[in-house]
Structures are given as C-alpha cells and as structure tokens.
Amino acid sequence: MSKFGFIERQTKGFINIDPLQTGGKLSEEAKKALVEWGDGYSVCDFCAGRLEEIKTPPIHDFIEALPDFLGCDIARITNGAREAKFAVMHALSKPNAWVVIDGNAHYTSYIAAERAGLNVAEVPNTGYPEFKIEPDRYAEVIEETKRKGDVVLAVLTYPDGNYGNLPNARHIAKICHDYDVPLLLNCAYAVGRMPVKMKEIGADFIVGSGHKSMASAGPIGVLGMREEYAGQLLRRSEKYKNKEVEFLGCTARGVTIMTLIASFPYVVERIKQWDKEVEKARWFSEKMEELGIVQLGDKPHNHDLMFFESERLYEISKKAKKGRYFLYRELKKRKIHGIKPGLTKHFKLSTYMVPKEQLEVVLNAFGEILEKYS
Ligand SMILES: *Cc1c(COP(=O)(O)O)cnc(C)c1O
Image (cartoon, rainbow, N blue to C red):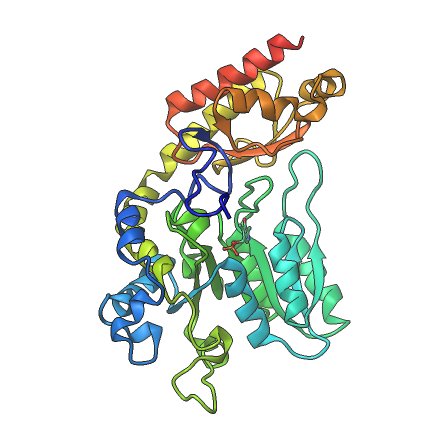
C-alpha cells in the first residue's frame, strides 16, 4: 500500500507543450475551487433534482450564460466532449443510418458513432503535406452515402487534433444544410481557446472539452445546440419526469463543474488574446523550420496545435543509444514535457499559453539535440 496515498506529479515545473494539456491548465480561481468543492457531490447541497436548476452554487446561471459564449440556443454540461458527441449521435440515431465524419476526426467520434449504432462515412483529407478537409468533398460523400441510407448527422473536427487545421466550417455547414443534414462541430481544441460561435458558422451542435481547452479539471464537456433539436436531445424519462435521458439524469455532479465555472471569466478573457497565440504559433513554426523541422497542415498555421516532420531526428533515432526514445530523453533532461515518448519523425505539440521565453528554451533544445547528434 505504500505506493498509494498522495503522489507527486513527475512533470511538475516542466515546460509543457503537450497539446492535451496546454489549454487545460487551471486558472488560480480554479485551483481554489478544486479544494473548496473537492468533496463528492459537493454541488448537490441544494439540488432539487436537476443540475441545470441548481441556484447555489450558480450552476443554473452558468448554463444560462453558456449559449451566449458558444453562439447556440441551449447548452448542457456533459462529462467530456466524447459524451456530448455520443448524446447527439444517440438521440439522432436510427436503424441503418449514417454519420458523415471528416477524415481528420478524433477516435472518439468513431467510437461514439459505433456506440450509437451509426455507420460512419469518411470525408477524406487532401493527404500530405497539408491534410486539408475540402468542403466540396462533404457534398460528394453525403450524396454517395444517402444512397445507402439516412444520413442523420455530419461532424466536422474544428480544428482537428492532429494537424490543428481549421477547415472552412461555414461552407461545410451550408453544404450539409443543402442536403438537410445537421452539422456538429467538434471544438474540443477551439472552445475556450479561440473565439468560436456555432450559429455564426451555421452549425447545429457544438461540443467543447473543459479539461482540454477551458482551464478546467476534468472530465467535463459542454454541448450547445439549436432549439429545434431540444425535443430530441433533452427528452425526459417516462419514469423520472425531470431527468433527461441522453444525459443519464445528471452529468458533472461535482468538482469538475466548479473548476469550469471558476475559470469561465478567465477563459472569456483569454480567448480575446487568440490573435497573439496564432502569431506566436507561426513564429514558433518558422523557427522550427529554420532547424529543418517541417510543419505540416495549414500553412501559415491558424492554431497553436502543430504537427511537425523531421527526417533528421528520425535518422538519428536509428543510430542513437536509446533508439527512438532518444528525443524524449533529451527533452526530459531539459525539463520539457509533451512530445510523446518514442516519436521522432512525426510529432505534435502546442504553444498555447506557453510564454515565448519558454518556447525559446524548446527551440534551443531542438537546436542543441540536432547539433549533438550530427
Ligand atoms: C481531446 C479530444 C476529444 C476528447 O475530448 P474529451 O473531452 O476528453 O472527451 C475529442 N475530439 C477531439 C478533436 C479532441 O482533440
């Protein structure tokens, strides 16, 4: 038992460029909330049976404030982006029906579809080196798929979690609507980082991830929808009249929602700095390219999540003592966390909210490592 109990985190004090983690770092307010509300079911002190209606703490007011932030009509809290996608897919699912998904989609979009009993048709990307999702391909795939069965939903990953590409979502929404197919925007890497409004884009659902991009402890997610889908999505239980079936009666019933609420004012402010984050990402990409490490995906890039390719690091890994783990070890020695162990030729990272001085340390590290092994 001695190895359990309080455990210190190994990467404490490291420079963190892990795409999963840069947008989920807690605000100071959220750190306080984590302790204050850490007890199980702490938010339920004054609950009358519906999370959305809890007045103390102000969960009701928060859920009422979300539509303005997300640019939707109605919002719900889920236990993560995947749970939000699943709720939508499950509510819209029919036997032998299809969902059309972009080729850069996250694995959870496929699994949510699988669990909801939907067939998946994929909109291919343009391949190396940009991996773009072109709007017109949605029309082709929807048209082909409609011959096989009902297309009940389309999904666009905005941006995707590999390349950080931001496709022309408005155009895609228009195409989907031309075919009467609702569009879900998977904004796990957008909501809480950058300004994004569902209705301005013309989509029908929007999904965000609290622990990915809203400075929150997780798991927690947000779901926004158009009013016309409320009937299907917010269906109430026959036996328990105040419980919503797609959300299993209640979702984030504890500290996770309190950290999300604690960080909300901070998140609302930080998205105003998005242009600066994009500028910083582009600067970082240029500096990497000066080292011969090539950024793939949209270029110039429009997001902090970037995918790189390095033939040289790959060549080094074939001869280095630690093999393909050499890069991870070299970065770890320099207290840099976030590039997956074992990757050398292709890897992704995020510059979100990472101070430029720290990014300079990262760039110098890559420079030194390349030099050391050349
Ligand atoms: C991280 C991620 C998810 C999963 O988010 P959860 O909130 O952990 O379910 C889904 N889609 C994309 C594109 C992601 O990057």
